[in-house]
Amino acid sequence: MRFEVLLTNDVLDLISENIDVALRIGASNPQEALVRGVLDMEFGLYASAEYLRRNGEPASIHAVSTLIGPDRPELRRLLCRALKNGIEFPQFQVAVDSFALAREFVLLHQGVGLLPQSLCRAELASQAVVPVLPNLFSGSIRLHLTFPSRADLNPKVNAFAQILARHLEAAAAGQ
Image (cartoon, rainbow, N blue to C red; front, side, top):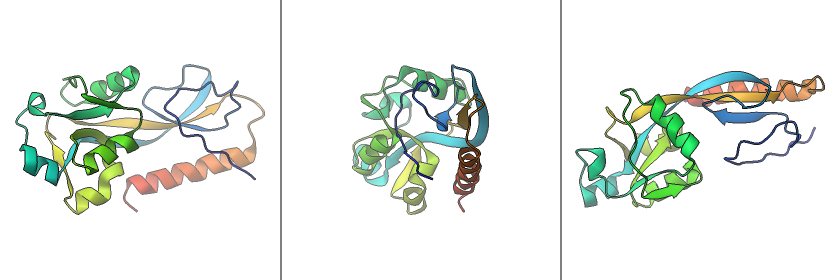
């Protein structure tokens, strides 16, 4: 069996693009699809310890000189809805198209980034990266496995999706 992995932030049409399995954050697919919630992804604002040493710990979100986050408005709205207290993120000074790029900016001491906690787990453990305003700007969002609802879904693809779901759940648990 051969797999092609496509990494994109675009919401693709699973049927017309001939995609067997998609991992999606938050909202379910706008088309007819089978959706299985896999795990809750914790997110928050993070900065390098060096950035905070240079710029100080912000007392409020408005004191952050460089805020880094997703450029997709629908993802931004989804993350705002997931915040525990209903407040919203201000405009991002640096808008990026991936959490991986936001993480790189944070590791290069360029600002405070909105990131999934799992993406900076090692840096959090070593205290190279620390949470910023965690009581205000942290939350959880559901990651879904999405399948096209078609009769020809290959049993091997379904088995792969089940294995992927188990690995994602184990990774989220820190195993």
